[in-house]
Amino acid sequence: MGKQLVPDYIFEVSWEVCNKVGGIYTVLSTKAKTLQKQYKDRIIFIGPDIWGDKPSPYFSRSKTLLKEWQRVARLPQNMKVKVGRWNVPGRPIVILVDFKPLYAYKNDLYGEMWNRYGVNSLPAYGDYDESCAFAFASALVIESFYKFIHGEKYNVVAHFDEWMTGMGLLHIKYTLPQVATLFTTHATSIGRSIAGNGKPLYDYLAGYNGDQMAEQLNMVSKHSLEKTAAIEADCFTTVSEITAKECTQLLDREPDIVTPNGFERNFVPAEEIYKERRKTARQKLFDITEALTGERPNKNSFLIATSGRYEYKNKGIDLFIDAAKKIAQSPDLEREIIAFVLVPAWIDVPRADLQERLARPSCATTPLPEPFITHTLHNHDQDCVVNQIHYLNLDNQSGSKLKIVFIPSYLTGNDGIVNLSYYDLLIGLDATAFPSYYEPWGYTPLESIAFGVPTITTDLSGFGQWINSRSECGLKKSGVKVLHRSDFNFVKVSEELADTILALSHCGKVQRAKIANAATEVSREAEWKHFITYYTKAFHIALEKAASRKTIKKSENLI
Image (cartoon, rainbow, N blue to C red):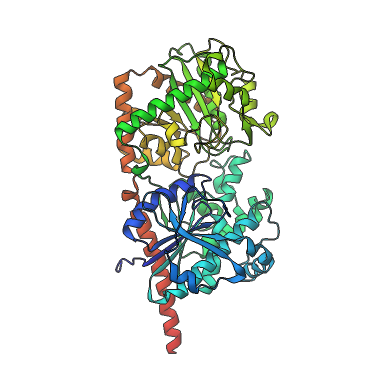
């Protein structure tokens, strides 16, 4: 192996830059500090300007950053950009692009991508147009900045995350072949669709053809774009070994390297602040439960939650609620347990009757109607969580030692009921459970142990497999319990999850502290300062491929 190639400039493009949607936001926002430390202001994130005239809570605009480029930049189609810093540790430079002017040119863009690469955009629907307009706009920004800095003198990497940015990668590959391209799929669109549609993904993976399944599941355009970007990228990465197998089978390219997701400890408050926030969070969770049910929980109640995107089967939400029913029926249930489902649904407004009770706690002596949900929903009768709670009769009856509370809002601190951020609420829990069926990495369990909260996950998550790869695993040694899950063992996993939660609830104070400390120590192994080396290797792979193209071009010029 020759000399390690190091980028002079890195552009990273994602729909979740300064746009909190899911786990990729956590990947990028926590990775930013380490990248900024290594490539001080030579790492530039590019995200969508979805804010318009409204201020973004994640972005601080600057009048001086990249001022000269902005002065001379001539972006096509009257595109406008905002330059500033991301309000996360490291405060990297961010360019937010207004991509809406490019909608008018989408047919021309799709035609070019079909002619050049065979990307089939004809059956596209949903968020495809929006994503491709943003990706193309981002590529135009990279192209403009590259020309401004005379990028041919530098090692430049353009890193694109997920299928939504694929068209940007393909445009850069065609117009600036000297730029090293990196494509990361955090989860394949077709794999997620197979799992979400109730088809057995793992036992039958070797028999699936990605193109055929895309036709069957109406995913042709997204899959076509993702597969093409993966094949055309100089370096193709994914976040876990389990997803690498999926990519190899469904996208027809084996990833060059696995780049596992790390975490940044700056998000965890110092000890004294932690104690205060834990007290506040528990008080809030107790108050909400009391206002809903009319019963004050025991101060020693065991608080557990699941959270994440509303992927009912993929994230194991159905399994978590099923396990709660088993706990409610168990003769081993001694300590009161409150199970929280913190999953954003199609909310309408905060419940007015609940808000009134929270404002006047003394009036909470009888249960509210449906004493398990904190907000009204637009699709209440069709909501999977609501329907499963009704079906299992988990209606928080008076005297029940198992209570369940569904908080269907994004926890940003202003939902009208909790009014705390997710991390500030996470601190108050005794444990978390994420019994996922489809989870390429699994940020929620990693976040949990980083905050010293023991967690339960499965070996169908990248994080669960990483835990199992360590020499020491198990709750007592790692703060993580990894359940074995397959396509067909739902009932068994539900029983094991219920048993694990009950076992945790039986732990004494000293034992709980030891498990929490073990969780914190393991989380330190997954900090970005350890995992960033995988990206360093990925940058080298991409730059080496781009360098070989430059060499070929020089040779052709000499002939």
